[in-house]
Length: 113
Image (cartoon, rainbow, N blue to C red; front, side, top):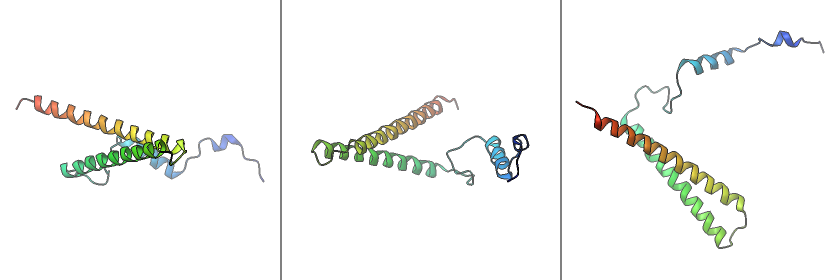
C-alpha cells in the first residue's frame, strides 16, 4: 500500500458535505416541513394535538410501569426509569410549547388595531 501524506487529505471535501454545509447555513431550523410552504393553522393545530396525545401515551405507560413494579409483576427498574424519563421529557416539552403559545396569544391580544 502506498504511503499517503496526511497534509494532502486535510482539505478533501466531498460534494455531499459541501451541500450539507450550504443547506445548514442557508436557512434557520424549522419544525415544519421545508418542502411545504403553506403551514396552515389546521396543520399546526393537528401537530399540537398529536403532541398532546403522545405525551398522554407516555404518561400512561409510565403509570402502568409504576403499577406493575409496585404490584411485584416486574423487578426490572430499567424499564420503569425509561418510562418515567420519557414521560417527564414529553411533559416538559408540552408545557414549554403551551407557554410559548400563551405568550404569543397574549402578545396578539395586546396589539392595538
